Length: 318
Image (cartoon, rainbow, N blue to C red; front, side, top):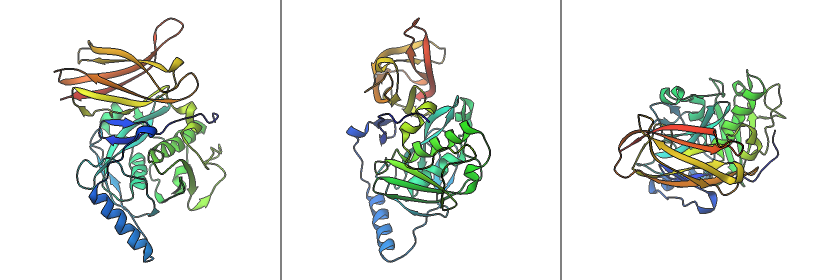
């Protein structure tokens, strides 16, 4: 496991832009406020709060989750409210044996639990087509999520610890930790199995307590795009955001049309690099262009200038 590094967690501020923690602005939604108030009232009366979720995979940030039973006690903070009580959240999968991000739209007051269930459900067909996969075993159930004093305790069924080697175990734990730590009230995550504290996950003993994203630097790509999501429809002017750990914090970007021709390109820097992960945002303006494009971020090799740590995601401009 890599030594902990300084990492900033991103929180969605609108469907296509994620801001660094120091600049996040959370949109309050009356429907969600009402749900939270109702949950507090039920808790005060001694009632158990339950939430239900099942995920459908229809592409990008368009799939939705609804409720399934699991006892939770959580207040993950306010996320984007595209309509009613719907919330757009990040969900983390695996691509090229590293973490990869996409989004899901969920409709559930147990936001953190619902986000984990969306991760368990796995990538949709479009995400699978570009190499996304899932290391969380099918059949894993979310038994509970408790968030208090900056720490989330996630209780999962024993399916979570079954099958796979050390890399698989590390990646599945990283998926859960990255998914839960996107919320502003969560700084660390502890995983329990069937309600019991465990010293490690699986036979490889992957750590399970007081985890944050920096514990998984070795399975996090040099450039992690967190917004926009693969397959998303974006306006001609949009923001790319995520985290990076590149030489001197510098990265290159380009937008390619359906023929592979470059529509626009440039470079930018993250808040830190060269061993310390930072956050980044790049504003791109494609003028009047519409249609399918490929967003590419990469690092130029200090040795020969070649493209390394390349990340590509498909988008639709319109």
